[in-house]
Amino acid sequence: MNKYCVVLEIKPEHLEDYKKVHRNVWKDLLKSIKASGVKEEVMFFYKNLAIVYFEAEDLNKSYEIQRRSVEIEKGWEDLVGPWISKGEYKPGTYELDFLEKVFDLNEQLEEKNRDH
Image (cartoon, rainbow, N blue to C red; front, top):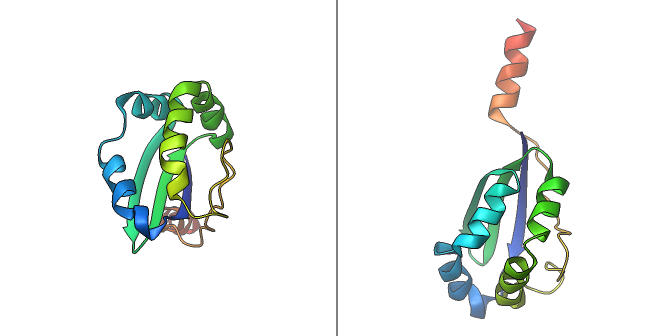
């Protein structure tokens, strides 16, 4: 399972709106995400930064499957897209700037156990 993390800067004037819609995401969108092979997705906030962590076997395949739900994806994108700061959000795409992973507890423990 591959692990990913992205950070989105939310416009301060839309921060509470963004949080509110993510506390009650559309059921069809949730189903689309899960059906796409995403095993885990969690969002945290630090100030006006949305930190999104998710796990998927094949990210490109997951996005391809999600894009098939055109009406759902477009509706969500139209709703929350304008709340994301310019330069971070690319409408109609999934071109996200991913964080570099430098530490993974379980991966390192597994490697150490193999060494002994």
